[in-house]
Image (tube, rainbow, N blue to C red; front, top):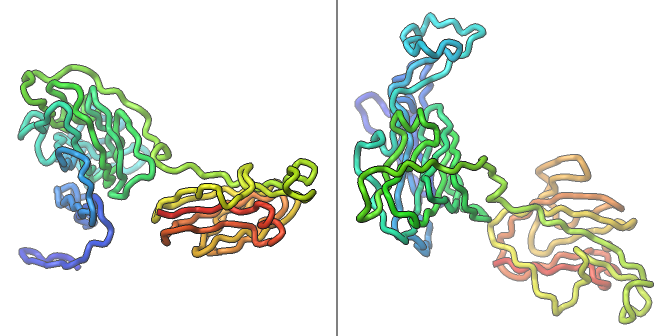
Length: 356
Ligand SMILES: [Cu+2]
């Protein structure tokens, strides 16, 4: 439903997923740069989690946006007035992009509006939204690092510190910054032109000078995988009787990642709701019906071939075969994974997970 001109529309919704979201115009502008997200019709929406340990001293929301868009022929970028000829623009071989005269954070260009006021030693949780209609940005705070805790509102399994943040249009990042470097700093674009157009905000430590520090921001290539989980390998191996130890009564043993299961083994701890991908590798010449208790996993790869939509709790892995499965543990407690061949299971082919 769209909002009628000069009218009102009330939406009611029950937010289900906590985190940093946003709402914005989805109108098709048909080339009119005064409409849609260009016009600034957006809002930052934050859904509080049910429980929040609150391990920070301040929580600050920042939305970046650019204003006064114009069309820019990038083969002739000395002539930004090209936009005025929109409608007759030659859409031929030359590339046309959108440029902007003003960049802002929370609607204010750098140097206007209030600075972010902090104290040394504080931990500040920033919720950052790139509310641009078209621009992908990189931002940094010289002398400081960002501990990235969530992407697009969803907690990352491995929070990591990075010196700079890249945000495509529409992306959100939650990051905690420890205020450990007193001064007056600019939190803003790492691109001098973009920051010069206003995309920045002052960060002012209590009792510090009024002249922004000149230090350049450190930047690092953005890499989503730094915040994600590795694929835990699950290597299945047969240990022949001759090497399996005297307590095995002259019989073979089986191992997962080099370990034959014993009831005294501590469980492998997994977190409820996290998406795990396991890489199975059967190094033996036997096939094994691999079974997971209390849950199903999705089969995503068999040797080099990719598939999706297959939910299984027993999967037969062939001799020398590799498979990948995705599993989101939803049930708390102990969950056993084992080969469903009783003879193999009895000889160590088991692993116990603890979901918490
Ligand atoms: Cu088996």
